Image (tube, rainbow, N blue to C red):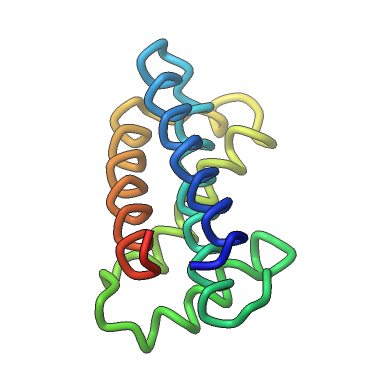
Amino acid sequence: MTPESALHLAKARQCLANARVSLGVALVSDAGRSAYLAAFHAASAFIFERTGKFAKTHQGVQREFHRLARGETRLDASYPAFLSQAYNLKAAADYELGPDADISAERAAAAIETARRFVERIADLIGH
């Protein structure tokens, strides 16, 4: 594994820890955002391992991860969709106002659990 990918995985794990703490103290929007960022950084590590390049935007990471995951039978087929859907948690936390900004604790908890599996699977695939 490259040093760059290792840094992204470390960041993914840090985001997961932040998500758990945030959910534990009822900062649900922060928990949802951190769950997405955990998956984002894991996907970035995967992309770098496969291509030697980093995508520069959230959309770029999603698009490239979708493309690379299509040919990777060891990844859960739901992970590309999760990455895109979890972005909505970040967007709600960062940009939405009023009722549209509300994320349920159940939705955040489910995102954290999926992000945990996502990160660990990527780590297994790239050897960390």
